[in-house]
Image 1 (cartoon, rainbow, N blue to C red):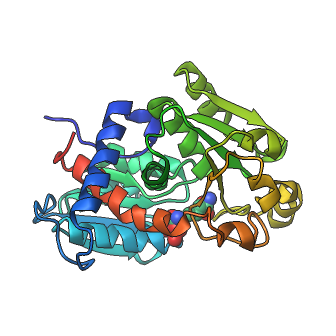
Image 2: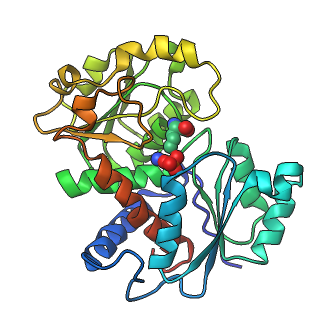
Length: 311
Ligand code: CP
Ligand code: NVA
């Protein structure tokens, strides 16, 4: 039996596979320039296939982009909030995996706990995609790297700076850095430091990931500055976070220390006036709308990879 291609974490894929996905996304996006958004790509690599999407948390971009992506690949989707499924009443996630594996061709899950994504994948005979967990957001980071490369060329050898909470999105950047050969500078307060297991793995893989408590040190010489909300879904220490992360706001003064023309990325939703100022997020260096659109293009190629159509 051939191995099922799950897409759970970027550290599990090799750099060549990630490169295939990124290049396919770029080519697919170019090939359909100016087309209506619902028109399928010429090769319809998901023809006849259905993706199930399970949401344990809120979503706008992930939900709509996966739906649009499947339509553009010539496939279909079934979407449900976990709270409306028996999963929400305690049915084991393994049983959910076994049932859905008989009904659909792939499963995307946005889960509270990464462990549940892993359990779903272990019991599933169809590909499982991590649409965000507490430990990572791999689909987002491929969209971000696609966006970066559209504006600045290959990410290999470039410097990306993460400023703020060392959260799930930051984790997926750490996973990608050694695979694609970019430098990653992370500035976060000690209390909201990135995951130490992720940092140790990146180091083992010769990743050039630097951590500091000083945002200025992180952005100096960076080709792109990235941040995210200070309070992620599931975080309960709202006030402590706002206080500890206040010195990590991305404003024009901080952007001025990065390379001239450095880009700004944010996965959204954003909290203007907290992690980023209006001037930066709505300014000329902000790439956030391309970044949001690229969720569709990156995910089409992730799906095509899961279905064995590429790579
Ligand atoms: N960036 C992102 O995943 O957005 P949603 O939470 O709206 O899906
Ligand atoms: N870090 C954020 C990302 C949202 C897309 C969260 O987990 O809520």
